[in-house]
Structure formats: C-alpha cells, structure tokens
Length: 418
Image 1: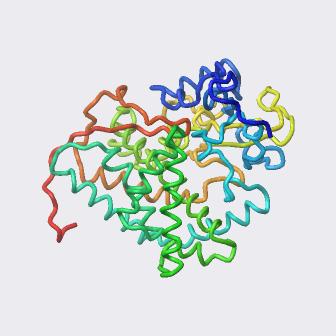
Image 2: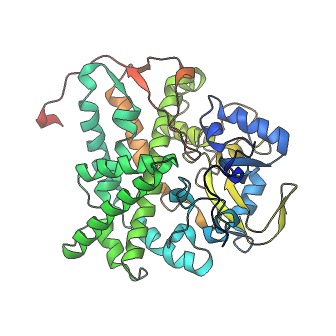
C-alpha cells in the first residue's frame, strides 16, 4: 500500500470541488444540490475533506441502482481506493463514519444478511406500547425542567436528549450513561479532529455495558444481542450495539428537530396542520422529504469500472448517497411545495439490502417527542427568524444548532402528577 502523503503535501490540498459539509451547512441546502445537479447532472463530484473527492449520487433512479446492486457497489470500505493508497490519512476524521468495521454496515451479501438478522430480531422484540410510555414519560420529565421558564432550546434541551436516553433505556443504560454516549456521538458524526476520540469513548462505554450484562443479564436489547445465536463473539456483539445506537441517535435528533422546525417556521404547513387536514404523521413525513435525518450517507465503493448518471466511475471510487438531493429530484419531486399526505416514496431510510432496520422505533420516538411537546407547550413560537437558524458542522447530518422558543409558562407538575 502506498504510504500516506506527509502533512503539507499537495495531495492534501483542496480538490477545488464543493466541500460536502458546505452543502449540509448551507442555509438552503436544497438550492446547493440543485446547483450541483445543474452543473454535473444526477451524479456530482464533491470534496469530503481537503484532497479527498467522492461522487455524490443525487438522482432518484441512480440512488436505487447504487443501493440495490451489491455486485457492483460494495458497502465494504476496504474497497475504497483512496484509503488503500493513503490519500485518506489513518487519522482522518472521516474514518469513524467511513472506515471499515466488522459489522452489518461494512458487509455485503450472505455476511450482511447474517449480521442483519440480530438487528431485525431485536427491533421485532421491542414492546411498542411499553416503549411509547417510557418515551412519553422521558419527554414529560425533560419538558418539566423548562416549562415554568416560558422559554427553551428545543434542540439542546429536548431533541438532542430524547433519542439517546430512549435508546439507552432500551439497551439497559442509565441516564448518566446516555449523556456520556451523546457527547461521544456528537463528536463522531462531526467527522472533524475529535471524531476518532469520540468513537473510542463511544465504544468503551458500550463494551463496559456488554460485559456488565454478560455477568448480569436483563430484559433489554444488550442481553438480547448477547444471547443471539447469529452473533459469534464479543466484537460482533459490540458492533451490533454500536450500529443500533449510533444510527438511531443523531438521525432521530434530526427528525425531531426538523419536524418541530417545520411546524414553527412554515406558515403554509402550520396553517394546514392547525386547520385539521394534516396531522403530526404528515408533518413527520414532510420532514423526511425536505430534511432527511441523514442528508448524505456514506458510502458505496465501485468494484469495477462502470457508468452512473453519465459519468465514468472507476474501480475503488467512493460514492456518497445524496439522500436529500435524491428526495428533491425533479423526476419524483411534487410540483407543490408540500408533499402529498401519505407519500412515503422518499429515500430517507435508504433502500436495498441496507435499508434502515429501525424505522418503526425511530418513528415511535420521534412522533411521541413531537406530540408531547406540542401538547404540553401550547402557544409555542420560535424567537429568532427562521433564516438565522444555524447547523451543526457535519457532511452527513443537518441538525439545527438551536431552536429557541417561547411559550406561556406552565406550572411545574407535582411529583404525583409526573
């Protein structure tokens, strides 16, 4: 393998292409993707970090081709030419999200199906009624902390916390462990200098939890993974938990935040919602179309030279799933700004063998979080102009840095009524 270029080498200079993080962080990311489409077509060349380029697949049909053809487009990052040849540094902040791991995300074919089965089985065993009650109680507790104040940040004090504590509960972690995981995951998804440190901390916490559950089994998903006959060793147990929690937390945070932002900022949607024709589920679906939890998803790697979207793709090229752009493809995008209610043809959960296995619990957590805050805080309004909302830095997810709101202060409920 070719040695990695030393610092300062021209190989690390900018490619001159649009940095992917600049698209997700743009005030109007859909407009950025439309400009890319106008320049390149449905598959565009972008920069992941200085000196590292990739293809961003933005066409709806091209996305289905990419995700459904495992014989041509692999999920295994060991096929990534730039990684093999040292263009991507071993210290790169991209690797916690894009590097190969011995888990379901990095596998294809029969190995993927073997590692996927425990995840599907784990999701199937979730008691949805019990989980809904637990999430609602968690939401009530969080809201009670700021309801009497009459103001809050619905990202930092709510949307960021709900999914992690909900997932932590499913896996048998307490609240303190959930908050530790959350801090580590925010670093991991940022794909910046602290990404690898966040990844190490994240796995250390989960490994301690696995070993505790091996000694003291409980009625939780951690124990279910330990007992699953399809998982062969501690590394596979760990990586199964890693996938479920890491994939579920940041994405559900984004889904909650974007649904609330839609209700707070879009007068057309808000008026239709309050007029009674649309409900919370319609708002959830509209958020998935406009701002999918993963704006961009890593990655597929070409196993041989091919063509996609009119471009020559070389063996070993990296292709990013441009989910937000594909949802906005003129081929399938409705002319009306609002998607037809009930239309779930979006690609927010990807497609093909690697389609998200946890759509049902993700919707349960998100729907409960949105409904609870709307019920408990009537008169909710945003206190900054919508265009001033900023975004956490990441090439992958588009999460608001804050949603500052005001509402009529509510009396703090007594312990008996919580």
